[in-house]
Image (tube, rainbow, N blue to C red):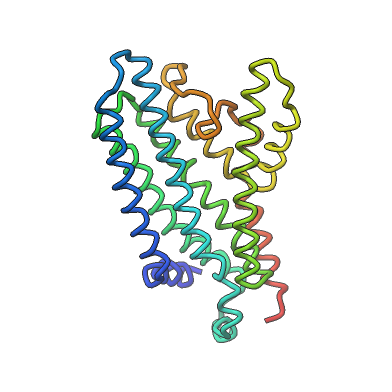
Length: 280
């Protein structure tokens, strides 16, 4: 398993997808940094408004950073198992004294380690750019630590889903499934936030909220983003974040967070079970 993990980690460096994502990340950070420079030039003098604006800018940056990492996950993992099966490489690997579950878990750990490392760097790059250009936010070390963990848990969840699909389906079908479900989770999260905002203003929008809950149960990536926002921008019990469809005003419950933590473990188990019974 350790050998497979090391191989999967090193293989990420040889993929053109990683180079493409790095280029896109640099372009994104350049444009985002320029936007921050212009935005913080005319920062309001009111401390409350300044802090709220800073939190919005950070939230937007982390949102699109999450999309970039999701793009990397899809490109690097949809063929993690199926591509090797289709090319015949897997038959040669299975001849060796390597158990099938070790291959699945090893690839999960190897790809997951690279994605986690990339996510941590991108997370703190967003925070650094905002602080560098004048963000009025003060983050406690514990808030930054736990928010960073939630930030990288989302792509880990996507990775576990991708490996499960790759253990059962072709690379193309897995890619379509993962992209569709990720988009479904994003839209469902927006609908839930819109429903929450409407309900706060006296409207009846339980249907929108229910749609968001269902999408979160299918793929809980959006709820982790909202929980990360809530945790990152809460200081001494005060939440410095306006309610909108990106930042999120409806905080996920403890039960949903437990479900989100258990989700990748369950999907990895399903991937191991599916790959072990697959005829190769």
